[in-house]
Image (cartoon, rainbow, N blue to C red; front, side, top):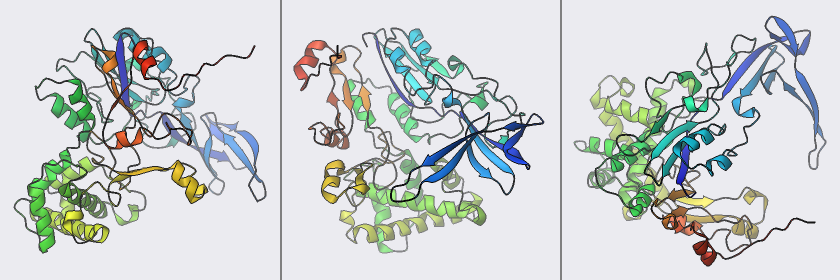
Length: 476
């Protein structure tokens, strides 16, 4: 607005708890609460099925929320309590207040209405002030941390909600900047630890942003725009040098190792080294999972944070074997050789064709929700892409670790507080949801090739740039 600009990334808040109930053997629609049998709310419903008979179901609710599993055999039920089901939790509705903030103090007050989703709200104004306020509905748990299911018998009740302004915040930090990238920014001495989340993104994206911003150089708007597309991988910069004094047994894997030794650690679309590293990191994560997770848990544990894996590798963890760093080094070479074999199968034996960004490797194809329900001709109109992509899940320009990018920033903003009309955006695939509109996917290529576009603030420039103008007149 005329006074400041704001944005957000994800802040993890644990606003749900799973409750477990003992059911009344004589009436399984009752559960024990504070020593007495309490009735569930039961709603009967009919689900009509295309080309089939209707399904008759019963929806059950306890005082905490909907029953997600009803175990008749074991006389047990499970229900979910969700903080975001409270009145006033319409997602992003608080934006209407934020849009009107004229100062940091007013912006923080507006954030106090932001129940869902949990966000890192950031602010910058024309007077040179910057700030960060975590926002979201955060239950107060006085006698447990929320990590495990708890009995629903009344012993584990929320004691209200933490005032949003009691969540972590920063105003005009001494270092002159603040960065968020979905990582854990909670201070070590934060007094309300059990009210916030436990699952965060790896720190690498935020670390890279802080590395650039903390370099001491002066920045212009174009530098901030470039930082949003930064593809330098800190994990690669940590792991690749560990191959320096090793050698692979196969000629091709050794050739790949030598290429990595000369690499700048940038996951660029044209980078062959980036393609090799991505395949190697994938093999590392898959094989460490096999080593670290006991057999009986493999079906349940599908993921270990990359930061934890890198830590194990740096420390030559016992999971690699009793021979310490020698076992760790062998693991690194073995996974590199497997990665080279994987790329041979995936892209052929010509290493010059192993560049990272391509339709057969790292790319983006935005599938429409109806893609699998329509014919090929209509599917072609609905879907957008593919186009090559750089980056991965650990770079500020986050494009995930899968071949097809399925998440990451679509909308981004880089603001010039001296001149709002210089503000630059990205978005994808377009501003219209109408597949026949020229604006359905007109922004996709610019987004996929890391280019911003201007979105003007002053009325004169908006009117000069506009393509259509709609006037809505209520019926009389």
